[in-house]
Image 1: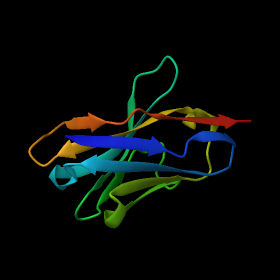
Image 2 (image 1 turned 30 degrees about the vertical axis):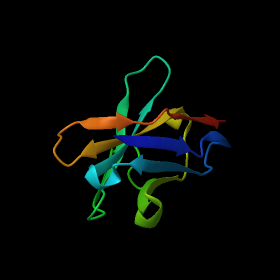
Image 3 (image 1 turned 60 degrees about the horizontal axis):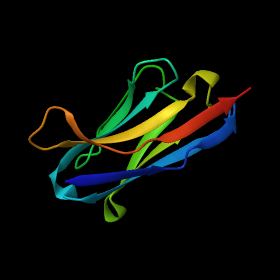
Image 4 (image 1 turned 90 degrees about the horizontal axis):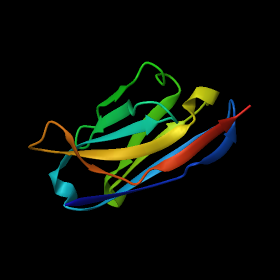
Length: 119
């Protein structure tokens, strides 16, 4: 099992920045990909970004490309999502997720952290 705990959400004005953290514990050696998703009120959950845990390769949704940046700290088993130039439409609950090395789906999810962007 892998446990994920997000932090760093909050209220920010449009154009501002936030950094989300996702700390993993448990069988972290079995993780191949770490991803971020978000869900706004009344909307489906959507993909935001992902990183390959070992290689560091990243992939971003078009809606956040150029504004959000993923990074990881192996020593802390933590992935960070730096969010800059935030827009009103970035308001959502952000979830961290982990995919196992033998899986094609995200097997583990955090509890989510609220990000609210105000005008």
